Amino acid sequence: MRRLIAGERRRLRADGRTNGYNGEVEMKILVVHGPNLNLLGKRERSIYGEKTLEEINSLLREKGRLLGVEVVTFQSNHEGALVDFIQEQAGSARGIIINPGALTHYGYSLVDALVDSKLPVIEVHLSNIYAREEWRAKSVIAPVAKGQISGLGWRGYLAALEALAGELRGE
Ligand code: DQA
Image (cartoon, rainbow, N blue to C red; front, side, top):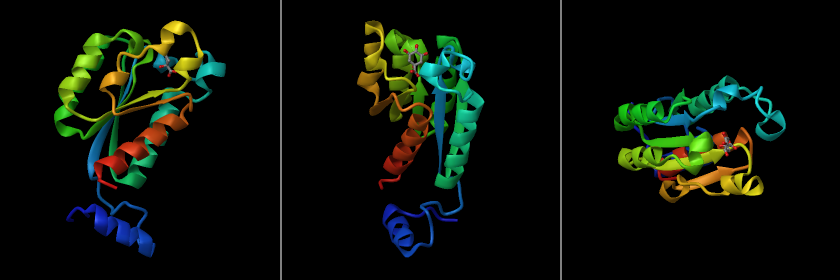
């Protein structure tokens, strides 16, 4: 099936014939989680929320299906493994959503990998990094990201996916 262009999609949506998804996977978006995010659901729940990483990933995959996006998720506690994943996947993906965990504040090889991917990046934080300890308020990722969502909990990932998919489609 041919891909719909943005104008056609808008017209169909206005007609109520589609919610923006024409039944095929149009693009792959990577969702990358950094150190300690494997502990979500157990870790500082009053700050990071009650959902586990797998629950968040599964919500993302579900939303991806509605949007025609293949969501490929990856978590590691090791900066080099995150770099390897980005290098391996960048060629076949259209964008990256990343919560770099504490690497947000000092992960320069991660910054380089994101730049080298040449993909649009949205940085997501469950907590509001500007309302916590001073050292968390600096992100080395933000200057190379298209945008940042901080403090909206798990909903921030879904908002990032919707924004990135819409943007990539030119909507
Ligand atoms: C975090 C904020 C970081 O400062 C912290 O190190 C994390 C999680 C967040 O999602 O709020 O691991 O990125």
